[in-house]
Length: 183
Image 1: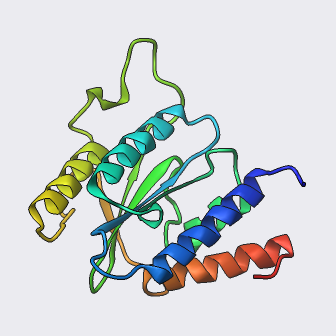
Image 2: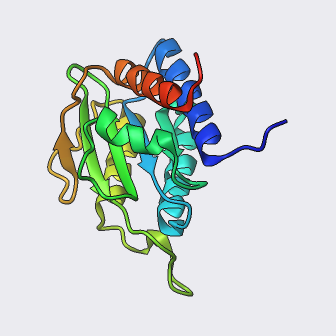
Image 3: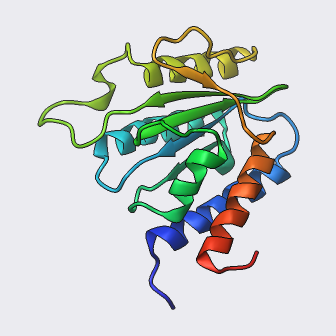
């Protein structure tokens, strides 16, 4: 069995993410959270874990919360930036795609590196990623539409191609072509 690399790991995750988005039926979770990190971004990984715990409690699926680059820089991570219109955004970062017509993408740069001894990532509740998570929890708990507008530190971006599943499909095709694989 070939050794798993950041490229193979992230391409497999991208494939599963796309399949989940395409097959999602019924009441869709109101947001898809995408984390892009580098292998040593422990702080971004901790924030991802906070989202994973909360999303799990809220009943989100795998395709509602994904992270790329956690095992190192990959072709998939690199392709997601232009493929989702995230050029110029620093890594580590968070992209929150609110479902609806149109889909809206809100982004925030996350802290990188490692926390100092004794610090916790959730100590600062007045940071964009934390305020966004609070709004997501409220929207799901109260059954109301989600709006991330007006959160200081979150930037709104438009998708260059169209709906998220189509954008992900195109990114997947580019990565597979670059890696010499067929779908």
